[in-house]
Length: 148
Image (cartoon, rainbow, N blue to C red; front, side, top):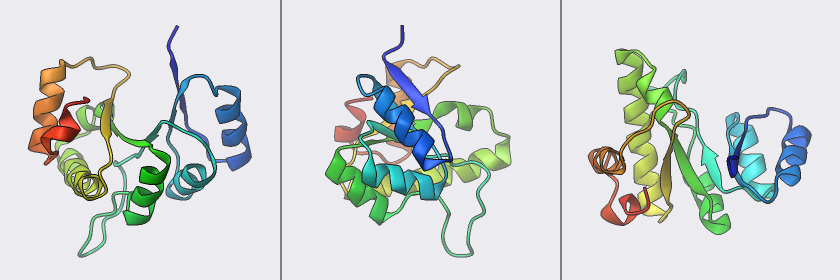
């Protein structure tokens, strides 16, 4: 039996009910940008998984779905930021490059706010040394890669 649950909901009341129903487990939440902020403000979760694929970047900034406001909330509530390995591995080359660039931007924000990041994967099992190496390549400091 797995000790975590992934909740991906677009209705806040349904998400709140799911989170409260599974309060004993490790809760991983993934939703739209607005839902991520609402859930981060009002509910107790362990990991916020941000979808990086299929976004539209602006001219001078990448749209990574994570900003300083969310970082401050996550820091206050001690929520880790999740990285989906499946999303990176299953994307085509052009999209993968964009995802990694957005991910690097998120790593910089997490580094500034002393947030932990974690890799999550349903299908692909990776060695912890591979994950640490990927984290270091993406710009994670060593204190962040110790917990991967």
